[in-house]
Length: 165
Image 1 (tube, rainbow, N blue to C red):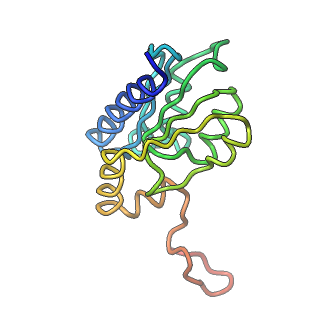
Image 2 (cartoon, rainbow, N blue to C red; image 1 turned 30 degrees about the vertical axis):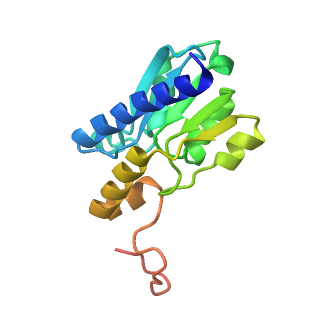
């Protein structure tokens, strides 16, 4: 397989994971880890809602599912959405050289960290990924803000000494 074919195949697998998360009542973000030849070695999807684990983002779940490995430096990580700081850091930590991103219109993660660490970042601007996230964000804005770390009532001031409700 040519690299662009591997990237498309990995993104398709990640999108299936995002759809699985949505069907489970979760946040529709999926990830796939594969070899440069296109062999899928792990899959994952966002499980924050399903498990209550705030670190269970799709890329992190996928990397956990891959288990202990010595070949991280040869793999391709695909995600339906631009990876956040935590997930980008995990990819950098494991020296994953290629990160394929379905879209970054609805959320711009830390692609700069990935590129700065020498990762080749490929943004596919896939309309399926954009549509899935736009629909979810419109329907569940509070849950989306929770996932990306936006505090409740962001931007609203509370009297000194009180806490937001």
